[in-house]
Amino acid sequence: MTKNIEVKSDFDILETAKQTIRTELRCIENLLNYVDDEFLKVIRLLFSCKGRVVVSGIGKSALIGSKIVATLNSTGTPSIFMHAAEAIHGDLGMIQPEDVVICISKSGNTPEIKVLVPLLKARGNKLIAMVGNSDSYLAKSADLMVNCFVEKEACPNNLAPTSSTTAQLVMGDALAVCLLYCRNFTANDFAKYHPGGSLGKRLYLRVSDLYPKNEKPIISKDTSISDSIIEISSKRLGCAVVTEDDKVLGIITDGDLRRMLNNKEVIDTRTQKAENIMTKYPKCINADAYAVEAFNIMQQFHITQLVVVDDKERYLGIVHIHDLISEGII
Image (cartoon, rainbow, N blue to C red; front, side, top):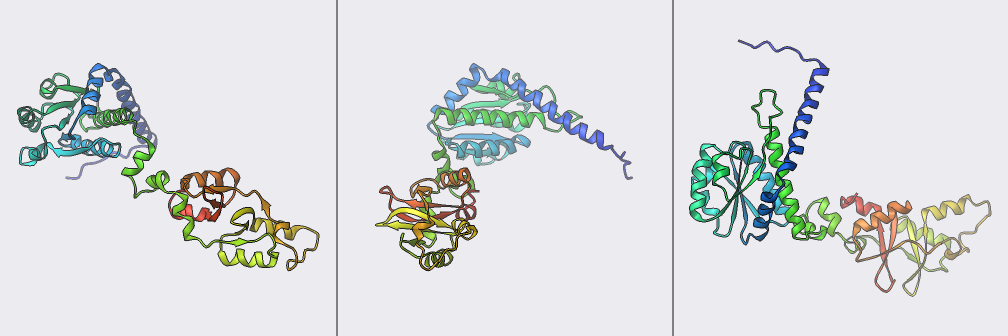
């Protein structure tokens, strides 16, 4: 028999969403009460760990545990995930003597946890309970506890893990960020763990990785404007750099040509020289600079290319905004 479902109003649906967020916000704010001396001891233990951090859980807590492991690994804390149910069927072998184990559970009294905890204690591994019930079996058996208590779930039936999993996630982030802070983990360190994504590229990709892919538009100060236009068109970068003995004297861009054409004075492009219309002192960037720095300069001065130079200010090439776009920097 099909259940009759009342059609809910738009207002009630939106209000339900808002109430869910309000409930979880209150739960998160309450976690501040549990960032205490016990929490500090947890950080000290994890920071001094000579092995890995093994995170375990079951059900929704297992999913949160997997995310916490990912965050720890990406911020310099070697970690692995071990499902609580699989641990008692062979996966316990992945735990090494110097590893520290974090068990995540809302109730702290699930059957799998009750089987797993004595096995961990027998191995001599330090055990941290990330639990919502400080009177639970897990909390009382652990060496240390991260309290994730929530007053109620955002679920109107107070059943579906909502506020409780959010609390676990937030406390996991708090652990990871504190460890990051203790390790003096920098943006360059972060890039080492994220070399493939656009986020990592913003942290490690340098101008020297980009400009060699482009042709090198170059003219002298005595080059005619006609030949300068040919150089600009053939190299397809919207500019040509005026040099003398490899040193940058100026640049001619599409904009310089437009301004020349808008000038009421008649100019013979075959006899006029590049130095007559070039922009002196163009914006330059060192080849060893980060690509994101090139983007910041382009954005600041509303330009689309930069002249690349070496440590001796010798002209090397051009980095164009299209290079940054193609690499995902923008």
